[in-house]
Image (cartoon, rainbow, N blue to C red; front, top):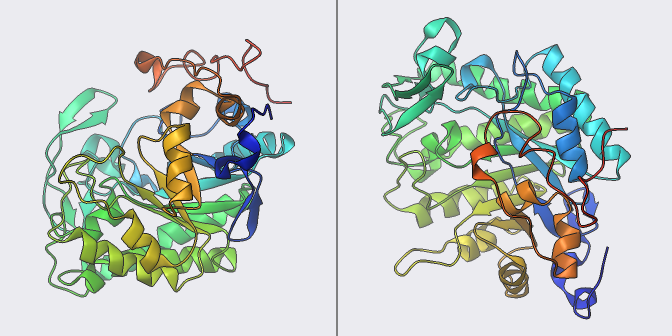
Amino acid sequence: MPQDATVSTMQLFSPVRLGDLELPNRVLMAPMTRNRAAAGNVPTELNATYYEQRASAGLIITEATQVSPQGVGYPRTPGIHTDAQVAGWRLVTRAVHQRGGRIFLQLWHVGRISHPDLQPGGALPVAPSAIAPAGEAKTLAGAKTFVTPRALATDEIPDVVRQFADGARRARDAGFDGVEVHGANGYLIDQFLRSGSNTRTDRYGGTAANRARFLLEVVAVVREAWGGGGRVGVRLSPVSSFNDMRDDDPLATFSHAAAALGELGLAYLHVIEQRPIAPGQPFLTPALRRAFGGPVVINGGLDRDSAEAALRNGEGDAASFAVKFLANPDLPERLAAGAPLNPVDRATMYGGGAKGYTDYPALEGAPAGAVA
């Protein structure tokens, strides 16, 4: 890795241990939906090339990957619930490992952020409560207004938990180094966590402890599938309003969740909070770090200097980058060298082929590696 006069003393480029893994640097690739799976939501060689190009990340966390057909919320997003999908993901893990990288699969169920057009048999999406989010679903026929989802019956919830366990086992079969449970950004687990989307009166609703129950049941079975928590991370977004989300007391809700997760011996907690912090906006990462008691990955609006400052201030142990990794396959090398970053072509972020996906140049001026 290119070095300038300060890199050797920067935390961002020093090794770190997350759970069972020793990472060579603290520059992690955050999950980013790219809508480039093939028919059947199957990863392909193109996806393998994309991830292999970014193997210098301390850890790659893949795009969100649905654990069942019921969990689908967007076209051409990959799954981890069929044999064909497992075979497609093996192309990805093999390519990343051949370059010396490490890669976790992010396990996903979108809950209400779907549409009957994307559901088996045209069924309603499921959620903790029958509350329609504001906004529109992205379908193959274009944008359509979100529908009111069907509230899961109490006796249905164990089957949804099982979907995450099955996804974790398949991820292990596909060669991943671990998994991240997606509990952020307004999707199913987040919908259970937050009071604005969960008005249940059974054991999954009401108190913060009850609303965290679904998350903790999911993480417990995923942990069991891996034989321990050292290969399992969890992502949370305590104050994000994305996908029409809110909570009456995010500090209480997420501090309880973080403390309960901390008892499971997980690899890390991945917290999304945008920086710089807007006036009057709560900033909960320090409180969640204290509650969790284990390694924390920070995310949200970071650049090299702000990430380094946050790590030195004790906000986290590693930093994840999304759009910067999208446009810069060799992001750790560029950050270490203080080199300019490639501009992002936002028109090609979602869907399409190689353009805007695997054709961003590395520092040498040519696209980063190819699948061997």
